[in-house]
Length: 277
Image (cartoon, rainbow, N blue to C red; front, side, top):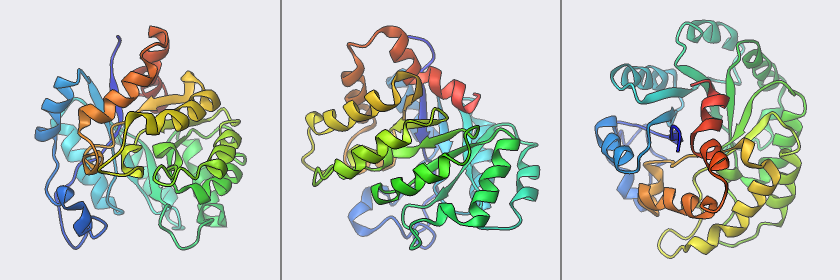
């Protein structure tokens, strides 16, 4: 197999105030997660490199990830954070354009009270600025927001978008009808990709089975096809429910019968092409 890339993982130095999203139920994550811990895991899984994605909503997060990437060549790209509700984003993009390892940006929409914030005038204007500098945008939402994501992407046919974590289907209840409908609509836009990541944390953390993921993997594979899918571990968040190896094994197992060319795309080629690694 050609180069294997983990298209979605995180680093942090745990701060209980800043990282208040890590609750008592998530105590396994209440510690530092840094490159020295991840590199042996990647080596064991035969993964060549990764894309580090922002976890904290601040530009200090970008500087933190930049410092890690400078010391670890196998961090191939960064998805940073910017305030997409700000009128000042253009000047910030100008600054980051000097730092080519930053490939794109993300704004955490999933928990926002305003469910359709992505369709606000300022947000749309800022998405428009990304395209001019060839930055990607990672869409982090819950299933009820997929309908707004469809309206977002249809306005920017040349902007590279990627849906994180399959749009977080509700694997605990298996209430997937609206999710399925909206995934199929979103995938009609050929500039939208999808990360096969974050599945284990959307299911029952203690009693999931490989079979729980068959349906959602069928849906995204049929909808996006192998040219617009990529593997991401969501490490260390995956450890709420599974080890790194288990998270990767689920995806490996699903695609094991696919042609090697297709597997190469899902496990590296598409990430390299999409993010320009």
